[in-house]
Length: 331
Image 1 (cartoon, rainbow, N blue to C red):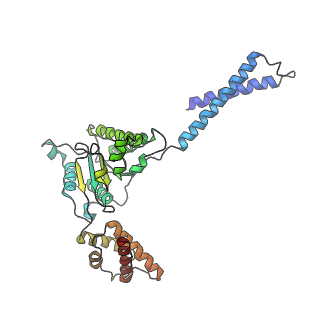
Image 2: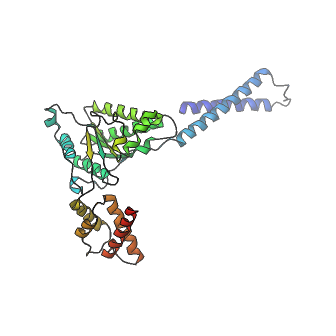
Image 3: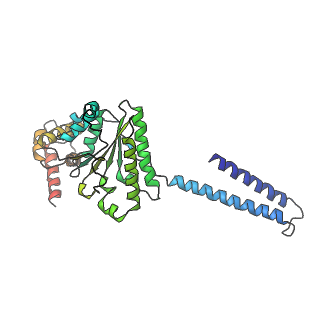
């Protein structure tokens, strides 16, 4: 880049010197310019125009450069003890493989390179993935499938490569030599419809993703694990999540009463609430609700408390909030 700037500056100086020589001539006229001078000025002008076009192209290139996906989430680290639902056996086996890999290596079992979480919306798939990263004490990089779709051809591939490049860097620096890459809404990348219609962007993203996963699978120094989350497992192309790439497919369900009570207890500590509010009563009254629904319940109860100038959420606020949520769900 510096070399191009120096060339443009030199050409501009030559053009300026040539025009000054011609203009300074007292007998200057169109007829007085010989062919050499005319060619010199014309050629210099074209070079300046080309230089300007190059600068404009560079500015546009950097202006439309997408932001790098994969935010490293190192705050509020949680483990499986903080998880509010039943821990699937597949998750326990997955963690054990990384904690004691030699035991599995003796049996000829390789470390997994991918896992798919599927279930209803708001069931806590992201929370469970963060708990796994906390249990393994390794970096956790979160991205959304929409982060890979861009306007210009080639930028989608660059986004995937940059995500895994960042994962590789943080894994090498971390003592565990492991990093988890979490991709939400995984079905948007490789749905059957997109793969069947030959979507250029989807095929480019999938091919790059698989090549990156295969590359890290053969790297003995570090482990990069991809955890994808989806609400629509049946829409993902089976070739993308076949065994060998995503060996674990885990269903994440809504929490039961005990899980809801654990989650409600955390929310009662987080949000201003009256001490007389019973977590057992809330857990009993919120049957069938997802963790996202419980957070919404506390949000609505907070608005009601503000409406009536209350300092904290009380039982009446939660009763009214429950009524609003149930009316919306029925509608």
